[in-house]
Length: 421
Image 1 (cartoon, rainbow, N blue to C red):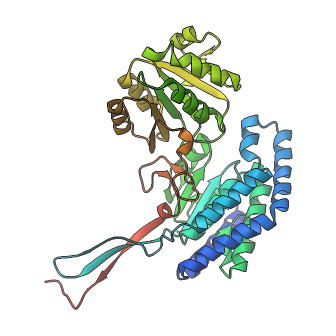
Image 2: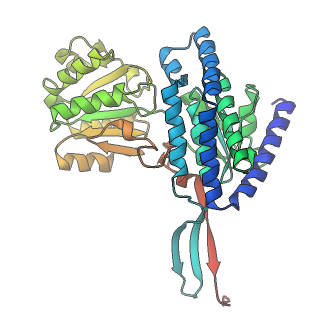
Image 3: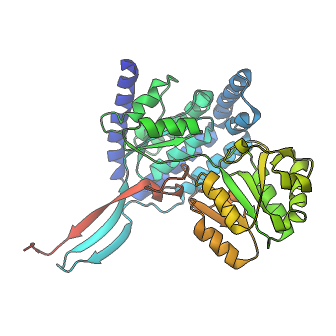
């Protein structure tokens, strides 16, 4: 690691700690106001942010980045307005700090209260989606944490423009601007410095990106990591599925936005509806420009599909491509998901309540849906205002991670003079 990079990042982490301590003691309404002014600053600086994004897009196209990558990187006015609306929604969320999780009296007579507190300083390492910078910043402020953001080089200009606006908003609310920081260098050693923990200044690392990034973070981090693996999302069309419901849900799950982590990547079709429901779904997806890669039985019912290979199972395409496999009932579907799933989001479409209960009880993913699009695996849709990611690990949070999930707790114990014998 370059000494100069480590020095810059250590200074940044030290400032983050100071800012976090100063912000934690402020009342909830101050944090709310800071998020509101951050949203206002982003709105006022929309032109600057979109111009920076245009620079990133031009460079990405020059580098030959694929269409799915460009889609994740792009911020148009409608998308930016959506990001700003998400920040405002986070401002309306209840402040989690000081919330009593549990409270009881012990046999000794002391009162014990488990209360929420900030985790500390977060390091959020992401790749091409600049909206992550805004979401992570707002959620960090809401939960009383400081955050050091590190976007990929492809989104550097966009991320810096967003962070600059948010820091202006913090200043306008008289809150410490170092609650939100982003290094100006794209040097790869920045990631190594963050993963080192910077002398215990970093409390949690959140990777948002592809398998290679997450694998590196999990292998090298000397601090806790909030895991966010691939979104290998499955949809299972049970024999009892309503055909029209299945068509609508599968189409939305796959084609609403193909480059997001909750997009459907593999469709499992019960053999009993292979000749009825599956061709209708295939017709809809093909009309939308989705490439279908199917096993032999599914291709017999829809010959236009390409032949799937073993590499197609368990693959996150982030593109208009869908793997399709025939299964012989619920147990067969569960076997496939347990083998190839990533623990992110999985779906069953069925009218058989027993099948739904069995599927939701036996699929061990962060989000398990019945008769609803995988697009609902999302912090905003869960009512969190936004999300810092979809956690696929078991500790300490799982599924969409909002402000409440970015807290830990401490015990407040009060007595009236008790001593222990």
